[in-house]
Amino acid sequence: MASYSRVILLFFMFCCLIKELLLIRLTNLNLKERMRLLLIALDAGHGGTDPGAVANGLLEKDLTLQLALKTGTYLRTHYTCEVV
Image (cartoon, rainbow, N blue to C red):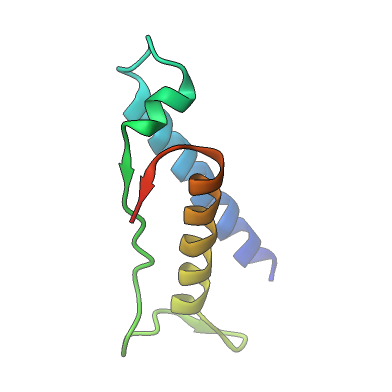
């Protein structure tokens, strides 16, 4: 289970890095104003007939979907941005 926690942590860190890279040119605006200008597309990856990795009774497609949904909810709650 610890490896899944690391995957989630790395994904969150990756999202934070991408967010900062996207916003680097918008330095004259505060964070809330910059986020309002963004459309963020979250792709959970696997699904349908492709479950991705399977280990310890867990399916990668289920984990990535849960993570994408929670990330989208967090972004919509804390920032004024469009998440698809």
